[in-house]
Structures are given as C-alpha cells and as structure tokens.
Image 1 (cartoon, helix red, strand yellow):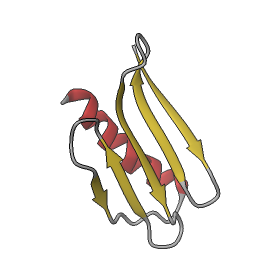
Image 2 (tube, rainbow, N blue to C red):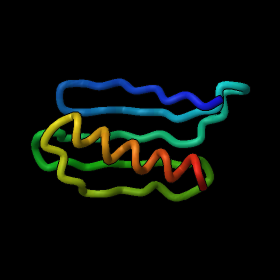
Image 3 (cartoon, rainbow, N blue to C red):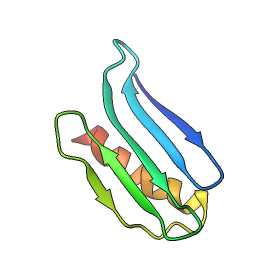
Length: 76
C-alpha cells in the first residue's frame, strides 16, 4: 500500500508519497506561490530534483498537477 500525505497552507502545498510498509519515501515535493506565479519542486530519492514553473491559480489546479506527477512516479 502507498500513502500520500498533503500539508496545504494558504499559498503553498507540501506532499510526501511513501510506502506504508517500511516507510520508504517514493517522492516528495513543495509547491509555492499558489495564486501568484507558482513553482513546484518534485524530489525522487536518488535522482535530481525536478523544478517546474506551473500556473497555479488555485489549490485545486495545483493539486491536479501534483497528482499527475505522483501517478507518473508510482508507475515508474
């Protein structure tokens, strides 16, 4: 089983995607400046950080972007 943990603030969102058994972190990230210009940092352990400039006018659109990236991580 895999777990997605989300911590949403007023203009940011942090997430961590991990395996339930053993607590291995599969990916984590930070989205900043939601509603302004938006920047996302996505990290996969053992690989280089991925930074993206994404239009994030609301938490809803930002979460949709996150989920797409996390699903890709889960399948990869």
